[in-house]
Every structure is written in structure tokens, then in C-alpha cells.
Length: 63
Image (cartoon, rainbow, N blue to C red):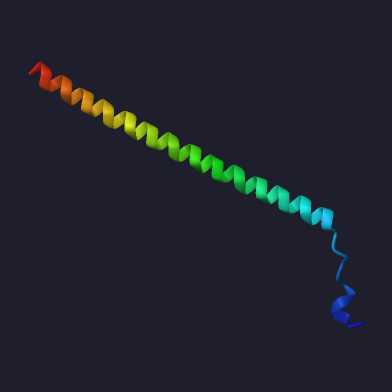
């Protein structure tokens, strides 16, 4: 056996699967948080734009 292969530990498939699942879950949660934040910012932008339009319409009506 070559010295390079002497220090290789056997593959623990259960540990690798658990780590992969945790990593996948972490990435999924991060993507969901980004989507929620984007939706929140978009909604607030729409609210702000509609508030400006409403204020302009009220000003025109009052004038």
C-alpha cells in the first residue's frame, strides 16, 4: 500500500449525508430569507409609490 493511502479514513456515509442535508437546509433557508426580504422591499416600494400618487391626486383635487 502506498503511504498516500495509509492516512485515508474510511468514508462515513451517514455523516456525509447528515452534513449534506444540513448544508442544503441552510442554503434553502438563506434563499427563503432573501425572497422574503425582496418581497418586503418590493411591497414597501409599491406602498410608497402609491402613497405619493394618492398625495398628488389629493393636491390636484384640492387646487
